[in-house]
Length: 182
Image (cartoon, rainbow, N blue to C red; front, side):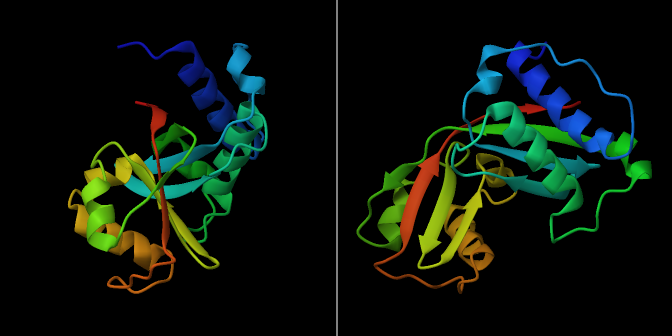
């Protein structure tokens, strides 16, 4: 199935941003009206199906093209979980761009109610408690399909205990459009 023009443009922008860092020739980006509108994105890098970097924005505060380029650079060179991408890794690195929909708060009575409201495979989830915040893209359901485990791992990512719950925990869900290099 051919990729749509927006997805092709976003993947090209992300790849160009990374390759520009190595002084490589840039591919032409076909103009698209969405590229100048504010948007929130995540750029995920993989190698052999394994995560190699993932950084993004949860709020739309800069133009889509800029957001993708900056997040691609951050995923490649500033994700604290990985060393900076080396030029010899480029050919085996695949880029995925996720365009986030506006988050929607999940009102729940307790953790069990919150988990029951989740839509596995569909919802990205933002968890906030005080100054701690973490998110999982909807794609994370592929490796964490159990809603309870998904929630526990998200809490760990936020620096909380897996069994932590408090009335002040705030949750918001979001969907994504995503495109991935093959």
